[in-house]
Image (tube, rainbow, N blue to C red):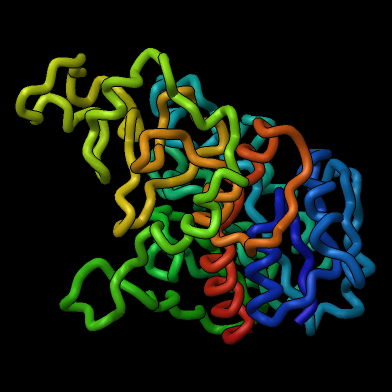
Length: 337
């Protein structure tokens, strides 16, 4: 199955699609560093375009439409949970220039692929954003596609990270495809293997060879508080500790990932694209994560190359679809188109 990748970012979904048996023939990404990351990792047979998707055409792909799928994760800022700090009437999701759902649909309309898969944040299903979600499905159906909207947790598919994402599957002229089945579970009664902890994923990057100056918290504002947080907990654990002499914080007064520390035997919380200086996950050794560690939690291959400065690389990693989650979702699409 040939595949067009839109809003490709650093290529997490593309890596997954390739592992699922698809061939990425065209990848489009607006960010220059992310486009260069794609060039470092995808070579023969893949056309990588650093461009505004609105300037590109896709009609010529109709010649291969019966063996073609379109995948992508349009910018999710309009649907981010952080947006809920703003009054709903001021958010105007439909008018947000970062909302690229219409461009995704335009590509589908022009290329007429056998199927498509759109990925976005969990809060796309929130009542505040339901109108945009429903409008997308209605428009896709008007193009002749039957849609399935599903919520998937990356940890259920072998990713050592609790990261929920919405996937919209579309199949041309076919019956509605089923929801993908989890491969792992946190509930022993489900009869599935348990979720994976981060320990084995981070182990290859534990040596001093991977040291980054930015990982140090020495002398930082909340160094003492971070050191006191137990693994697998966040700032709210501080007021439960016996003989603790540092600061505590009002419950609910901070983002949930404030001072969150990884537990080696548990999945990580979501890797953020632009974390604040005291936003986790932190390593259980009381330091910030190294870039290859964050990439490992996103299940990028160990030899995957990222282009750009440290801040840019963090953004690329945090914005990516975990590769194993992408593999499971694209495989599910391919099996049902």
